[in-house]
Image (spheres, rainbow, N blue to C red):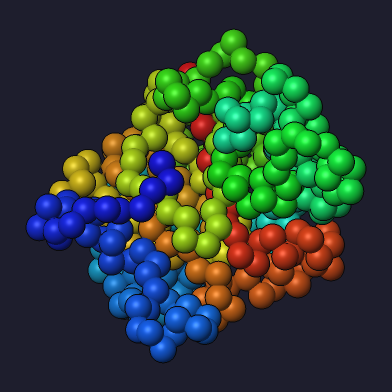
Length: 339
């Protein structure tokens, strides 16, 4: 689902595609920038919903923009009136929780038997983050296996190799709990897997409660973790592989700020654009599960990334290597009830 638009004429694009193109990262083509740091092209962000500001204004005045309402009286859960089943919870995760789930996303969530996008080429890859931190190199030992070696030792082997740091930067997804088979677009219950950590299950249940049918409790059974770097996008799509769309997808944002597009049931429906910051939680249930959505841009510059406090806390709490990763990255944890 990571993609870049390549359509020649705006007239051929749907409303969703036009919005993706509008917010996507492009660089200035002027030759005076060719020998310098590339500068992003300016983009009009005036129509992007900012639920952080909406929440602050609501707390001060009780006023809300047209088309926005709160899910319950005195709650900090916001809804968009023409997208029933969509809920936005700004600042839902504390700094401590954000740091914890960034660490887990880069360490334990990547451990086999959990699968990542690297499985297709390298098979199960254990200890990727620690290996990148130690400047190790993944070397093909034979036709069936790869193993990490220290840099000097790797040089002595005349085999295919790739540095752990490159693999970390090319990490795009991992799966927790029931494993999602991207080639078949379904859950493969026969694949071995680790259960979703209980602390993450409890967090998902807490935030999902407001979107659940009366008298039912959310059951976290599978999760997909997406990893974004500079220029990465998530094209417009539906999450439609779960059996019961009345149950929400619980989506937690970590790291650099992004723009999220929430469209309608057709890509011809003009989407709502909104900021997603680290610590925000989004729920999509019922009719919202039928809405196209995607991420056309993340911001990694200091002015717009909005992660100063997170970077400082992560550096102090978990070490500089985690902070260095997240200052140019975004992580999204999507937790689902599969059956």
